[in-house]
Length: 315
Image (tube, rainbow, N blue to C red; front, side, top):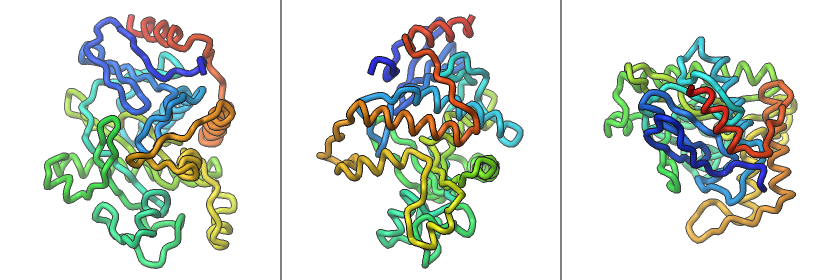
């Protein structure tokens, strides 16, 4: 599909380096600012799918931008501006090598671990007698180490993070505090939209002057799981699956086609019709999460559009 952006190779003035993540490409300009391009790549089970999803990068970038603005009174963030629908520009930060995962409900990875008989996740106890998608008595923080491209993120306990010196204790206390505050605010925003913020992950970094800030994305369908609040309890009582607003629908489709990112498994073929349906689901996610109508950007030549907008901003 030519109307997607799955790879970039820009050369901006003052460019020092470029880092390519699973879905974002980050350009370092003069060791001062970062230009982060949200591509249309789709990653599931830590594997990047062979085809891009139309408008996905724009959707993720615009949700993250909106959510950063809606939480900047609580937690400082890296963002300076968004010169293009797919681009965020922010302060250069040194990222912490952990993702702060917080779970209000026992879903996804937590539920899979629970089903396997585990009652501890990242050193945090999970109560007996819970059903999948039940609410935890209190949200639990279950960090993960940040994997390099192609590797899997690994669960890690707070104790291990401190023992291994991945994050200092003083900094880690700030990360935990910020994580809880952001999750509380995110849950309140979701509730106004008739949604439940089930779980999410946050990433943090340090600016050059040592300030801890939120970086990357926040409350997007790639980093978060949402349920529809309407009918949640009835579905739980009947033992039915919850109506989800997240990337989980892609994971479930992959699982049903015998793919979980394990060795020897191949990504199933994604038809143009399937790709289109994923794009439509992402647009639905955007509109439900933000409460705004999604306006499609001009995708006749995304690379040229992005380059033009970023160059104008950097001038």
